[in-house]
Amino acid sequence: MGHKIVALVACLLLAAAASRAQALPPTQTALPATINAQAPASAVSLTLADALARAKANSPQFQAALTQLGMAREDRVQARAALLPGVDYNNEFIYTEGNGTPSGRFIANNGPHEYISQGAVQQVVGLGQFADYRRAVAAQALARAKAEIAARGLIVTVVRAFYGVLVTQGKTQSTQAAADEAQRFLDNSRKLEQGGEVAHSDVIKAQIQANDQQRAFQDAQLSEQNARLNLAVLLFPNFFQNFSLVDDLATAPVLPPIAEVQQLAQKNNPELSAAFAALEAANHEVTVARAGHLPTLVLDYFYGVDANHFAVSTDGIRNLGYSATATFNIPVWHWGAIESRVKQAELQRHQAQVELSAAQRQALADLQSFYAEAETARAQLDTLHDSAELAADSLRLTNLRYQSGEAIALEVVDAQNTLTQARNNYHDGEARYHVAIANLQTLTGAF
Image 1: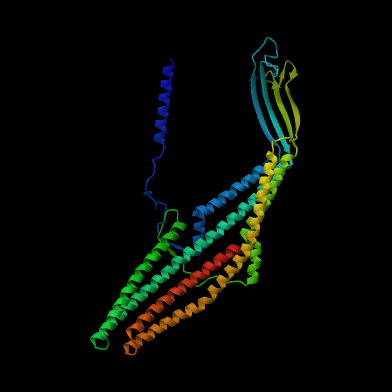
Image 2: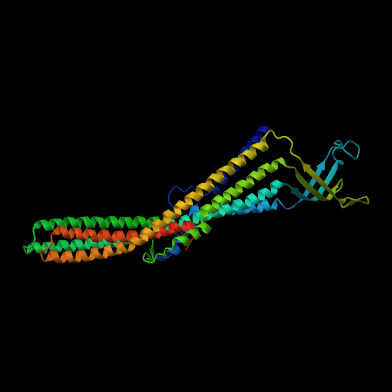
């Protein structure tokens, strides 16, 4: 009989496992076939603000910071609830073997049948509960500061990727213009060679320049494609790539005076806020640990039925009633566990103090460094723009001199390369200023 039962149980387990395997979805070992199922139907034009909103919705690091903030908020709710009375309703039935008397064999029970149906209110009074709540409040402030750090760090990442795409687009246009110019120079040198005005070496030099510019144009196209792919990863959950960007490279925010930036940094630096919140949480952690040495008062109040019959009254005797208890727990000996927890908390507090001091020093250094970077980048924009215009004019004049026989091919090639480099430098300078402002705003917030 026992073997039959074992076999039956085994068959049931196998059947359950088979049904569960059928219910599970197949394991995916490749990219989903419908990766663009939720993609927009047409091309999307994005401003920087649009890109930031999309990145916040899709960034796992930023969402993880928000998750930690939400968990810290719920920890505070739970710690606050521990300060308030808790209400439960208990229902229990106890059966005791009889011994021929109403009390039953176990003297601790009231009879063979005991019914308990009571509402219970409990309040725990102790320093540890209050300190734990204040620690939870500090932990929530710490999580909020870390979420702000993650948000501002994400802004820097998006700004760098957003303007990286715009810069690569500008470089693609510059290199394409340079390739077209190199091709025109090659055609012009061939015509001049046919007229006997220049040597064949000029044609060779022009051909080499045209080949170089064509390769540079292909590399620029590849860089632009890679930059767009990096931005698409940040912005779209379905890897959508049919988007365009609103070019606002020339409309960077104005850099405020250093005094105003310092005031903003004192108020809005999330790194310092996180360090202060961590120190406050560590202080409360020490209080919680030290509270283990103190007594705790537990108050309990019960109202309901605790009788041999599940009824409000039995034989004219009322079963419904109440009872109350007060327990005063005094810690006496715990083999050094409480002292050990206090030492751990004090070590954590010391570490928090060290980290706060380091954060303050780093904040001062970062503020000066980021402001100097933004100031330098802004100051160089005008000269970079002037250099690009001068290079364009130089190329025009050099072409005229070459056509009149006053310049050699090397001068034309040098002028072409100088113009391409000047235009690329200007695009890099614009992006550098935007990124420098974004880095500065990680300390100050938006301005």
